[in-house]
Length: 402
Ligand code: GDP
Ligand code: IMO
Ligand code: MG
Image 1 (tube, rainbow, N blue to C red):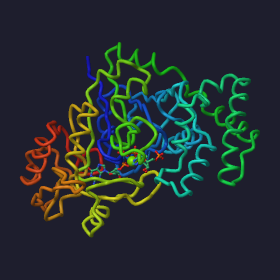
Image 2: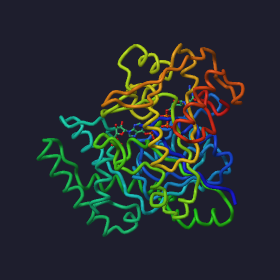
Image 3: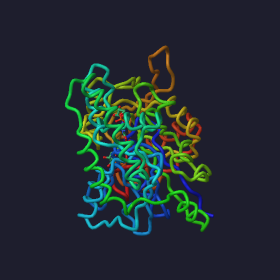
Image 4: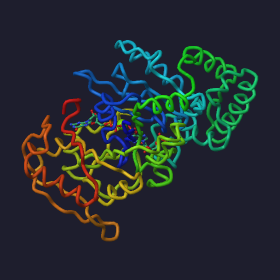
């Protein structure tokens, strides 16, 4: 039987997951998102064309790959339809290829609005302002509109009316802002669902069938380990469990846990939004990494904070996700530096660095380890030894071939 794979970010997101999912999809029968929502921004270069996916699994560019959105994902139907439209304009047909769990909790415009109002207040953490936090709150508080509720008009009306009331109370009384009209919310939701209903179905049984027939499934994580609501830098985290261990619940397919785990790590570290980042660089070097790495958010366009690779954090990520292999991305961004540092310890809150001499030659597009500059090989070998995990793939450019 072919082995399934869970692919997760080991840092604060944007490690290059989209690129690697696309790269691996060739060998998989299905790709499934299992948590997060359209806060994710996964970039893929197909030939020279750039795609940024937010909800649709990054395996979508292969004809043979079936795409799934599991019940752990918070679903904005509007964002989904927008993404489908953009893909269809480029000739990628989603009907018959994409299946979304009927158990997904829905993200509505009122979630985005309350997220934005809260972010505009003094307790901002720098969210993507998409409504992810409030939508997960509703799920845990048992208030969510589930996709299957859209099939029962009476129940939907009852649930939606009370949800709109709940948010309008906060919007008016806490934020002194314009409330939603229930009729508009209802009408818009029904309208969107009409266009999207053909994509909903059973994900659990379908994944099980693929698995039972000997197929393999790639589970595409969003965000990253340090943004996990339980294991991350709380409260500066996202509102879902981003770890590989949440795959069983999020995909809706229990046997998904019997997969290998590929942890994606950038050769340096980035973070968007507020929160601790011990190896952050506030000097010219940080700006240089940002410039060379084009470190701007794929979802919000915000500049990403940059710093050196933190090997203690990576080692912890290997442990918390039960990572079986690491994929090191964006090695090419380090090509020009005359020295490269990695954090190997902490003294109090201060990182202790080991300094590597830079290789100062291009690694772009090199596809064999032995062809990498020796100093780059040393850097990779050191990381492997330190974190005690095999680096089985190195990425040296944004395109599939690199
Ligand atoms: P994701 O959220 O983890 O999928 O990552 P993003 O797409 O948000 O950000 C990663 C960025 O780095 C994207 O612009 C990718 O095209 C780019 N990228 C991925 N891997 C590499 C690589 O090895 N080298 C370079 N130079 N760029 C890469
Ligand atoms: P991908 O999948 C990087 C960050 C936000 C903010 C925090 C909470 O592309 O790696 P949220 O909107 O989720 O409530 O914001 O989480 N964040 C991400 N940072 N990459 C992402 O996704 C992110 N998704 C959320 O910047 O700090
Ligand atoms: Mg991203």
